[in-house]
Image (cartoon, rainbow, N blue to C red; front, side, top):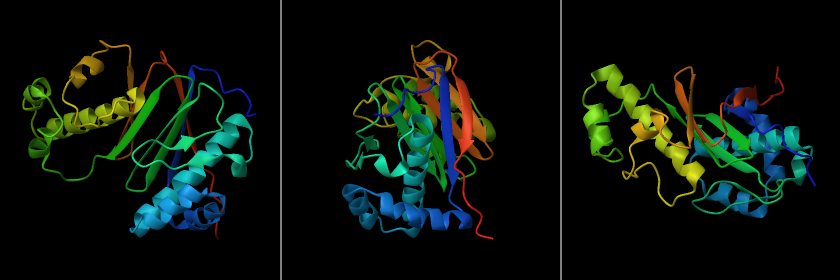
Length: 226
């Protein structure tokens, strides 16, 4: 049985970035994959996505081992299409969330329901055209008050927040949910705490019930290939 989790007010945010020096670790991680994970890996056609998948599995296993004490090889992952990573031998009451964007991967665990989403905000998009796909009327009205940079910021803040809340709440709908306004959460009119971090050109959103948690960022250690 894994050790007890860390203090509930601490959120350990684990990070990794697909780079040249992570390739060997990605290949070593193949040996740790469960049968369903290996089947999922085979089904991924893109080399980039395969590398993200493998490094995410290395990151999650490392984070869980650091937090709970089991060896990396002892964690039991079961892949289920369309749902968050299922780790069947974490301590009772443990919640996990995983996200990735353009090679950057984030993983977090909590004693409460939690969701995390990251997006590369340097990407050029048709913001005003895409907004109607996931913003409701209240958000759209607010969105159109902004000029270029402000509109871009509100677009990504809304998208990341909705994705994080979707993952945390477990509702069967993604960021395209228009039923509630994200302004409700951004203005702290909810039991959900919405936390935002900027990581260079990436925006990270965390949805949690934990009150004013201490967020500790930890990067996946990678051996030098030099």
